[in-house]
Length: 206
Image 1 (tube, rainbow, N blue to C red):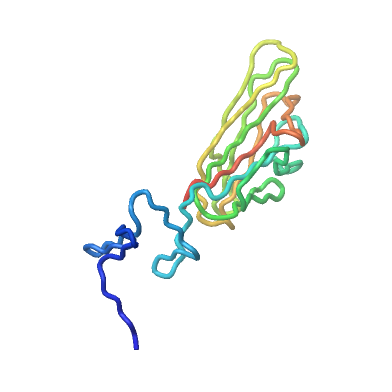
Image 2: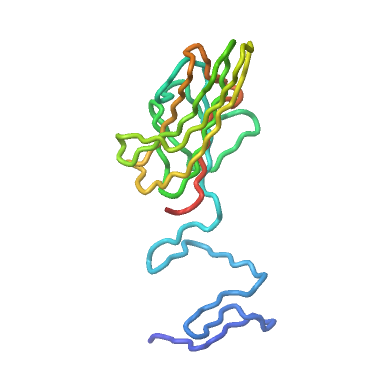
């Protein structure tokens, strides 16, 4: 025998509404309440995406300096690991400078290049590239830093960022490029702190 309980409102012992139904709208709890769901919240059989804000954040960096143009930065890359650094799993993976996202969504990608030159250097360009077919890359964002005059031992930063719509983790990927005016310009790497680095933050669903 099937038991059916027909009510519009369920209250606690103090008379506060726990569940209320009105005009086909079900309200759980009240303003100021904390609703704790044990298990998986579903929408018509499918799991509801997390609503707990940012669900993934990661940072990678260049460990060894290089000179000249590089497209893409394909070696001497590591995940940041200095004391106090943190991330939100799951993080990015990379192979030969091609970064793969762990999940679909709208991702914020940031790229900072620290460069050094002894003499006159007019620009260093940091470029974020993306592909939607795991093959053809298109520039998504770039930024120049530069100096004029004959100044020795000059450092500069180029910073750029973009939003990437990751609809397919097998095909949507990013890489990073550095262009310089003078081939003697050095892009700075370090294995103990982040000088030239890439940051990835998942902001929400695609």
